[in-house]
Length: 428
Image 1 (cartoon, rainbow, N blue to C red):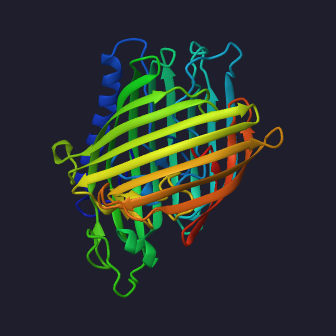
Image 2: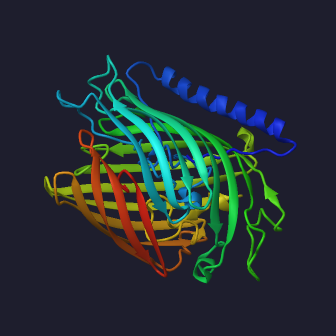
Image 3: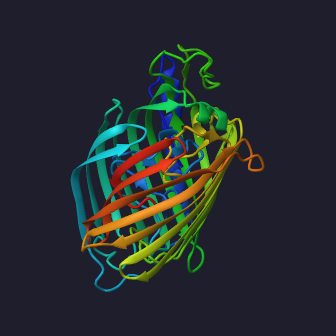
């Protein structure tokens, strides 16, 4: 669930109150879910989902897909999922503290300063998943910036997975239009998107590897043109009908989720499956200015032949229907789906991607990777457009050996597009 909330004009006091009420309801709703389910419970966040702190992705909802802001995270410290059993010698704590240079196709060069602790507090040493608490800030080459904090934890021997986070971002990104023709034209305008945000998530184990739960999010965005220049014949977003227009929607979303997780590791899986299906609902009945739904399904599977090799497969689909604002549409390049394309260049209601990645250890803390895949967007799943290829190579340096958290550098190429990525954590 992705949430944005923002800078408010003259009528901002009423909106601010609505946002605070929505955030309080979200927090209260998630905690109430945990309490009502009884002892031995747990909860968690978004798409195999990281809460990416310095780069500011609070995953999980229909509110705004990664399509809009792309791989936002110079620092990704809170992935979702994890192993179901913990050995007696499991690491008790580990720190990640670093200024991390990065690069994304959305923001260009970035510098993130982040700190995160992976730990098992006293009384919870046997939890399979380490708790993670962190915070950070980032500044980008295109004058985007953001700050954020996040926390995730497991309770009841991974019966409950709980996640929460808050951030503020002042972001600038490109809007190319809607549909395959707009992406092929490669014309764009730059948008400014200011966004404070909150998100909470809870998952409860209902079988040996199955979890049920929901995300809650509230968002009050302020979006306008960062530069009033509009290319001749370019079609602006429907919500911005002139260069001077501003768009300030309030979105509140509720996202039921089901997840299956048999991975052998949370941060570097080499065996097992992570499957998730969810439906993000934005509705006027819960305070949203827009009524729409976003359906997502993701399937990751991991294989290994030795301690030095691993192969990861990912299939992903998303479809948004109803009164969908442009920034909540599906987009190629969102998250890791698909590296090699500028996020938002190919945008429509439906998105399908498939990709694979081979990972090979080449030294104690160094890995080499090669990846490739296909993706497509369209107005509906039946009318999905051309298949767009992508591929690339990369290297990993393991920053935290106990939990295998790595610095990631990828270079990727797509159809008439390319991208470089430098961040923390595996792509999927």
